[in-house]
Picture 1 (cartoon, rainbow, N blue to C red):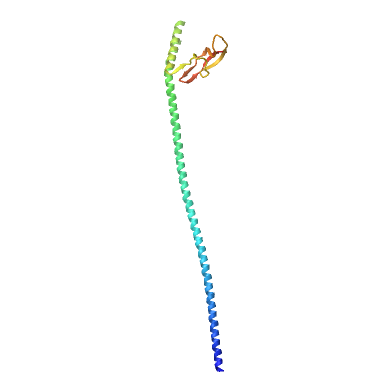
Picture 2: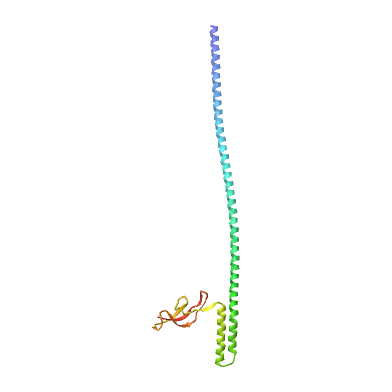
Length: 211
């Protein structure tokens, strides 16, 4: 009987020990699960933190790229502004230089013409101041006209011819006449002589045209 009691006691101790070990194992399992959950949460937090850092790095890199691009565009803009300013200055200088050259050419041309016309003017004044009969006056006028024509010739100015008939490029028909004695488009009369220099008409001839 005493032996059975001891056996029961040992069995109880074993059961208690097993229960305790089981409880410890369950506690350790719970702790392991808790630790795994904590590790998982820690890894998740670390991943989120890493993503956040990467996102911030990406934002910083994007901002840096934008600043670099903005700097490059500003440099290009400054270069274009400088080039435009120099172009405007060069054009202004060219315009002033051209205007001055044009004025100089015009002055030289006027000077050349006036040098040839002034002697004619001088002779006309002498003719007006001279005393004499009508024949002397006519002779003086003829000489002045000849001198004037010589001056025009030196300037390359020539009288427009009518020998080739009426030409609207050189003649201005102010009158028309039907006359069987003349062929078509023949210039019958010149009311005012025309002049040209080279191919440029200075004044059209004012004429009467037949048929």
